[in-house]
Amino acid sequence: MKNKLMKLLTLLLSILTIVCFAFACTPDSGDIDGSSGNGEQNQVIDDGKENNGEESNETETPEHTHAYVLKFDNNNHWEECECGDKKNLTAHSGGKATCLAKAICVTCKQEYGDIGNHSGGTATCSAKAVCTTCNQPYGELGNVHNYTKGKCSCGEYESTYYTEGLVFELDGETYKVTDYNGTATEIVIPSIYQDKLVASIGYFAFYNCSSLTSIEIPNSVTSIVDYAFAYCSLLTSIEIPNSVTSIGSSAFFGCSSLTSIEIPNSVTSIGNFAFAYCRSLTSITVDSNNANYKDIDGNLYSKDGKTLIQYAIGKTATSFTIPSTVTSIGNSAFYNCDSLTSIEIPNSVTSIGKEAFYNCRSLISIVIPRSVIKIDGFAFIACDSLTDVYYGGNADDWTGITIGSYNTELTNATRYYYVENESDLPIHYWNYWHYVDGVPTVWAKS
Image 1 (tube, rainbow, N blue to C red):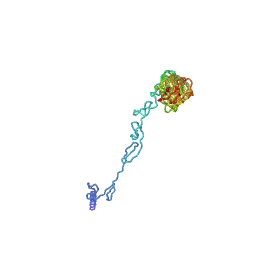
Image 2: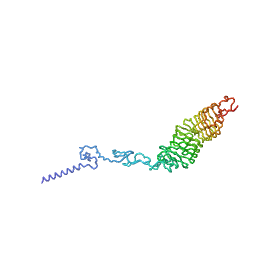
Image 3: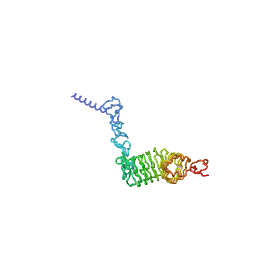
Image 4: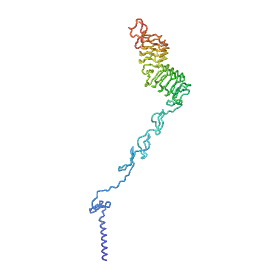
């Protein structure tokens, strides 16, 4: 019994000891540093481990979990965490830029790149294309024509359209226009007929076509043959395309209503009388790039200026001095000129061509220099008003000139020989002349 009592007492003391120890190890509620209220340092358990009475200075960093968000600039997009880590860097792609907005990336749905170009629509010869996005015109004029009865609003004709009544003839691999059987005032020649080019306008094709006022020649034509438009008295204008290389003899002879003509740089040959007897013609112009011809004051010359080919006889001037570069006056150069009353030929000229002054009915006087050695037939025929010829040489020099037939109007006119100084005049004289202020003046008889 005594032993049992002692064992029970021992057990109670052990329990009491454990309880007291437990209370002694519990920190006071006011301490957050693990010390007891009486200043004693206690163990701090960190993750179940003792610190052997030493205070720990380390704080464990919890493990980081990346949280990525989508970011982008004008060229790329990527995923980025707030810690700076990046992944999946990719260039923008897809979408289509327009004239109003940039392209939209199919991945990040953000705009990128630059504004696009206008698109859509069709440019014509008279209007720019209209953008299908912004409805604004853009770009340059196009080559699309809208034809009505073979003619576009810009003036261009359909290549196969032509005026009814034209007659064509196969000439090798191309066609030529040989005739016109109609009364239209405006005629259009096609560039293509029966799948072949129309390359020439033939002999007498529009000869004496009294109704014709204007004609459209396509740029397939390379030659306008002799008398092609002769005596088209109502033809007021014509545009020679830059494909034509030759203009035949008398091609526009007697086109009395034609006021001006332009010769393109492609022309390499012009036949005799090509623009003769065009009574209203006041201006002939030549493309400056033409290698064979040029114009001076609206008149036609060879490129070197040595041949006067055609004086524009519709001019109203009454006198004309031929440039000093000229060495020959071409055939029919002044044919049927009504306005000129006097003409001065420089001493550079050596020849005067056939019918050069034919029917110059108002011509009263002319200066012919000593340098002239040849005057072709018919040069002065029908110059019924010609009364005075001022010759730059003497009587013997005159007899040395070769003068062709049918020039009686020249040879029957009063002829004066040049003497510069009065002291050089013969004792008996009556037909000598000199210049007074640039004007041919007969020496007064003493």
